[in-house]
Amino acid sequence: MKMIIAVVQDKDSHRLLSELVDHNFRATKLATTGGFLKSGNTTFMIGIDDIRVDKCLQIIKENCQSRQQLVAPVSPMGGNADSYVPYPVEIEVGGATVFVLPIENFLQF
Image (cartoon, rainbow, N blue to C red):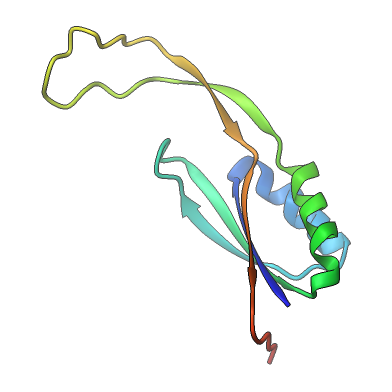
């Protein structure tokens, strides 16, 4: 048994959940917040048999693509602000951060 924990951007969560359900994966969906951009994320917890891990990872990869986004930089707190540039910068967001963990027991009541 494995536990897959996948942190995805909110924009990808509905499509991912739909695909997981279509392929008969059960998932617990948690609303989470990213630390860097302070934007909304969704964390999926999926308990599955070892033989289904690769299929689940494939579904996550196909439905959680990274993309470019403009972000306004945060002004510096204290210190020298001479080098601060208040223009938006383009960064890569999205995709998925996935952890695959071994689990000893998996019960459903």
